[in-house]
Length: 233
Image (cartoon, rainbow, N blue to C red; front, side, top):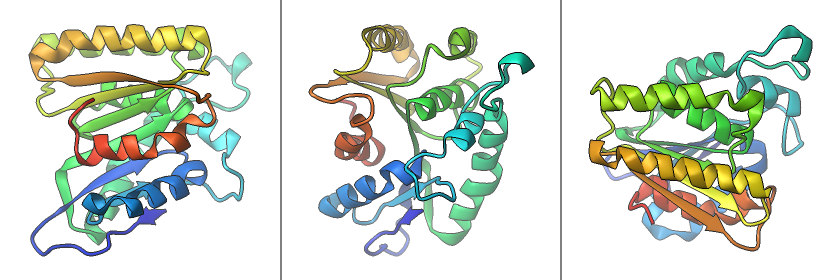
C-alpha cells in the first residue's frame, strides 16, 4: 500500500516511511499525512497481506520472529531474516525504481511484534534505514531473544564498527500496556542514551489514555513527525 505525494518538486527526492502491519494502520497514517501540508511531498509505504482482516496472525508471526525450537514452533516462526532480505533487496529497490526517493531519509515503523522486528532490524541492519520508530515492542518474546542482539549492537557501535551519525530510535508505549512491558521499554530507552556520544539520537514517549491496540492509530501524527521531521521530542 502506497500513500502517494500530492506532487513532487523536480530534483527534490522524497523521504519515505515504511510501516509494518499495513492492513491495520495504513488508512490512519494516510489520513494523518493528508492533514499535514508539510508532508504533502512525502511517501508512505505499508507492507500488508492479502486479507481483509486488520492482522494476518500467522504471516506476521513468521515474518517478524526469530527461529524457535521445533516443539514450540506454533504458530510458525523464524522468518525475520527473510523479511529483512525482502525489505532490503526487493521492496526498497522497487520503490526507488518507481519513485524519486531520498536515500538518506528512509524510516521504518513497527508496533508490537512489528516493533520487535524493527528493533532486530536496527541491531542487525543499522544502515538499512535512518530512523527507526518502535511502539510497544514485544521485548519478552522467546525469552528476551533481542538482548544478545542489543548487546552486540552496542559493542559494535562503541568499537567504531557501526556509525550511528544521523540515525535515530524513537520508542513509544501506551499507558494501558502491561506494567512490565512499560518498564522494559523505559529501561531500553535508558540504555540507548549511552549511545548519544556516538551520534545516535533516541527518545521515549508514553502515550496516555491509550492501550496496546489503540496506540498505533493515535500516534500516527507523532510517527510522521519523527519520520519526516526527526527532531526527537
